[in-house]
Length: 332
Length: 255
Image (cartoon, rainbow over all chains, first blue to last red; front, side, top):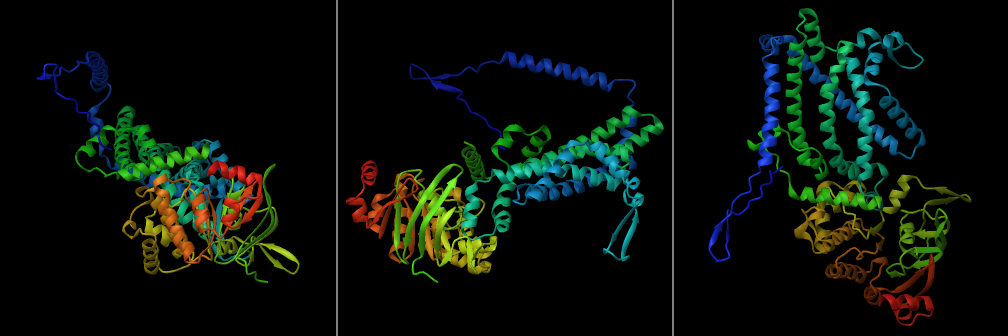
């Protein structure tokens, strides 16, 4: 994402033919508004940082506390695994939703309705307490006793409950993203594939999905970033994530604000890193529309300046615009 | 019973809801024949062409293409509907060229041509690539094989689309207004490619507004109006001495 700079002339040819300097317009209002905003910010930061009730030494002490670090690790693990579950299941649901088979269609609709219709907090607690419904989980060959049996309470730890709760929930949302991506592909692509003798399955795998990815991938970055923070809900099922561990520490030593600050700092770091990677994804696959919605953040710009810029091929942009106009045509 | 005709349609009808698009089409094409379909927009030309390779299902009538009753197997006095595999197998022997090219946007010109060879014919990648390059050079685009569709002009895209269809060794080529979406100066390169194809003996059904092309290349011209064929004959008969007033009125407007 190149920073656009409009170069303006420093001098122009005057009426007498000799060059005359150009006097730049002073934006007094911009300077005033900027100064005011900085003043408010500095005041806010000052009152917060000099607040006697926040013990910053404790914040520093707990920043790299082992339990916090292991919490970060768990948060990352849960986020990534739940996102993977969500993405895979989401694609499956989207394909089911678009299938000709009415049974698959309705099942997909029911799933999406259920998981979008109930709060994720409720789902997490539900999975954690699955043992109330099914004390044992068994995998065995039907009508025989050959197989394995587990105690549900041992299987359904906070970690697995978090994975299931968050992953299955994301799938419902992601299914809609994938469906939109698939439907945005021009019907002509499908027709050409079928006319060449491809089966509907081959058409989907080789022609439609690869092109739909261009539309689907940028929002997955957003989903992951949102997932990083949604994992904090996992503390209700003791998932040993960052928030759970932070809360366990402050319940003992009562340094509530300090540990919330520690957790927040780490969430911000993780979000910044994820945002950076998302910008790479967008540069690779994104459409202009996505770029218009979300400008690069401060950290991204920092990285982008230092030369770690993913080169966005200009032709890809043109293509994206083409497909947007194609969608417009489809709708009109 | 295999017909000598490549395409034989008797009383083919088709409705979209209340609107009857095809009101009974009688049409035939012999092997090696070039058949042009002309007529006003909305007369059902394109719909009929799409029925020929089963992209659109017809409601009634008989439609035999390449010796097969399109969409059904006739056995023991019953018509059995085709499976998706049978449809795919049938379509793989027919080439289709679309008005809006419909090249696969994520693939290069060469991959566009090779894709169906690999996925449908099961040819290995290197052989498919070789064949793709051959077909591209036949349409004069060997130097553009690594370009994506958006890097090609409309005329070049349409020629890649023709190469893509020809790579499958089709029995018959269907063209759905192949030059209608092109800038005027790009029309000739596509028409020249099609002429070459016609001279090499390819069976072709061409829906077109290019009367010059029809006059020069077609063996038979069909005038479509109101969902059926109003008049058929040699280009000389239909384009120069039409017997119906409706045909004359249409030609007066487009020529």
